[in-house]
Amino acid sequence: MVNNVKTKLASEHVDFFYGSNQALFDIQMKIPENSVTALIGPSGCGKSTFLRMFNRMNDIIPGTHHTGRILFEDDDIYSANTDVVKLRQQVGMVFQKSNPFPKSIFDNITYGPNIHGLKNKKKLEEIVEKSLKGAALWDEVKDRLHESAMGLSGGQQQRLCIARALAVEPQVLLMDEPASALDPKSTAHIEELIGELREKYTIMIVTHNMQQAARVSDYTAFFYEGNLIEQGETTQIFMNPHEQKTEDYVTGRFG
Amino acid sequence: MNSWRDKLIYIILVGSASTSILIVVLIFVFLGKEAFSFIWDPGFSELWHTKWIPVSFKKEIFGILPLMTGTLLVTALATLLMIPFGVLGAIYVAELASDSERQILKPFIEILAGVPSVVIGFFGLVVLSPIIKHLFGLNTGLTALTGAILLAFMAIPTVLTVSEDAIQSVPRAFREASLALGANQLQTIFRIIVPAALPGIIAAIMLGVGRVIGETMAVLMVTGNAAKITLNPFDSVRTMTATIAAEMGEVAFGSHHYQALFWIGIFLLIMTFLLNLMAQRVLRKYQMR
Image (cartoon, rainbow over all chains, first blue to last red; front, side, top):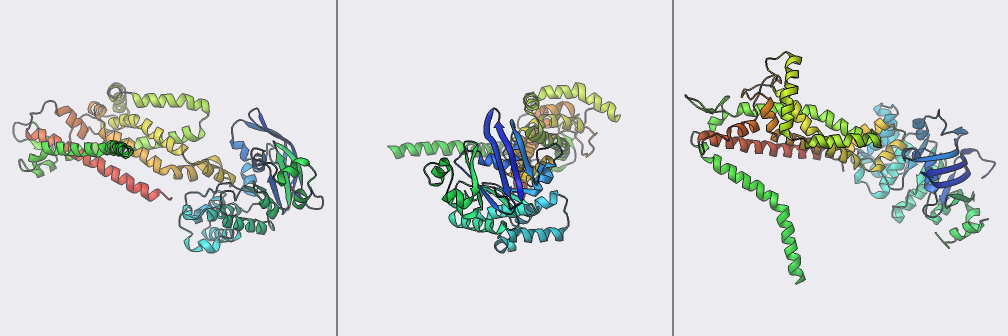
């Protein structure tokens, strides 16, 4: 998209298939480092599928395949010698519906570091505090870290999921409509948080909500029926789109 | 008109739902009625002897303790055997098996669930007990262990199928969240999915234990039916259910022996009741909702 910033992620000629059903057509895209890139488009346009390419979450869906390359710092993440565990440690994900484990808040955060071999209690406590602060949740839950995460409100649960993703110290965060199931106040909270996280992380966010894309992102890509129609700086996409389809979508003529 | 019909439907629904309460109460009343007078004559304490000699020229002894330890020993052994096979099998079928493997495994599990217990008992008598006898160098192959193995065969399909359902009903979101954090498949299974499915798995085990405690035919055929107090798996034992089944047909109606058999029934019922209570305690402890 932009030449003077470092590219963190890129896709080169990516086609994606569910069985014989093609969901993505020749996607070419570059994601700049330490920025927020929004993927917008109507339901079923392939934006979530595209997002899930970057941490290989589509691998767990049987009967899918792809062509083309996905690059993480110039390494093809689908090459045979890629360590998927390592990749997912570096590329974290936050899901549409908050999905904390039915464990305590503390155990939710430490799950990631723990499976990667960290057992030191003191170190884990530090990570919990740091991650929860990073997700702007620390003050609300610091006195009940050992209570069940299921007792938190929807917005708190989603921030816990963000904290859980931060705990393994990723470089990239993939967010799949992270606020779509939340009330306006919690949504504002999450959006504010995204603004802060941009300093340290490269963020890709799928959203249905165009105002949200306009508010939180630096770059925007518009998908339609599996094609990447247009990408550019968010202000340009919303104020001065080059394609007719993009203009129709962002002005609300269809969607 | 409408409210009258609603009321009728309501009554039918409440009635259907409370049938089991009614039946349990009726069973208790019925068992109690037959067993009641044993309390005075020959006396309730007569049940706590360590020997069961219901037919004798001298003095009949109705001690049910050896029957209880027999049931407990066989049940405990069978439970120890069925948990690993049932639960690990369920994990494999639900999480790791390919579609074609599942298509082979599932029918066999269902067939095993449907084999009549007397046929399994036959198998135990002819095949399993000689093996046990030679393997451990015993005088007889009719032991508590033989019975326990057969009971485990019978209970494994139940434990496996119900556990599998529990594992499969764990939301996909937990799985995805774990994988997205870089966990591998086994870590996801043992640290997220199994704990989340634990209430269902415990329920499955309890169903299996319930089947094992209540099972009569197979244990009657292969445990040797020696009423003695022992914790040795290689001893012959006699269970409560086998005693009732074997002796009920020949006992004189209304005799002390007859009443003692009903007391065995009552204690069997109390044991299963306690088991259910325990299961619920365990469930509550592990559920973090």
